[in-house]
Image 1 (tube, helix red, strand yellow):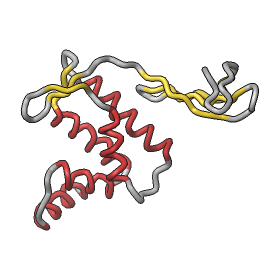
Image 2 (image 1 turned 180 degrees about the vertical axis):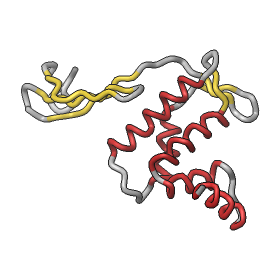
Image 3 (image 1 turned 90 degrees about the vertical axis):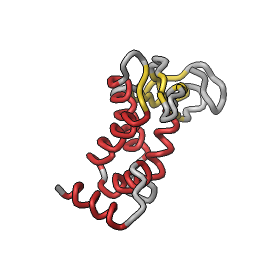
Image 4 (image 1 turned 60 degrees about the vertical axis):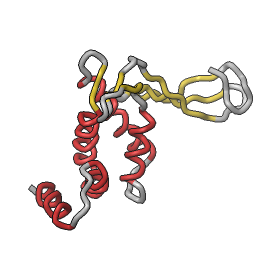
Length: 147
């Protein structure tokens, strides 16, 4: 692994953490002693079936972007955010049949995982995902969330 600061090839792993789909390694350069983080993940070639039935390659960054928007200004560390996205990605891969998964299923998975960690973030995501555009729809969703 090349050090991003001095391009030295000799680094050591200080800490390693595995979640369901990504291995996070904290490394230290043996020359300049600076630390950096690397991530390792499995690429399985998953395809997403969009609402208009066209397919596109699964893009983890789209989930990260959606999660970032709904947890904005909430009390989440970058590690917690990465862990949440990793859990969602792992569930998406487990739920894909023949390497294809519809966007509706991905949305359900995201909502279920967000609901477990932060109810406000869940409501933010639900407002967009479920296209809630009236107070009555918000109240109905809040009542379901309370129960």
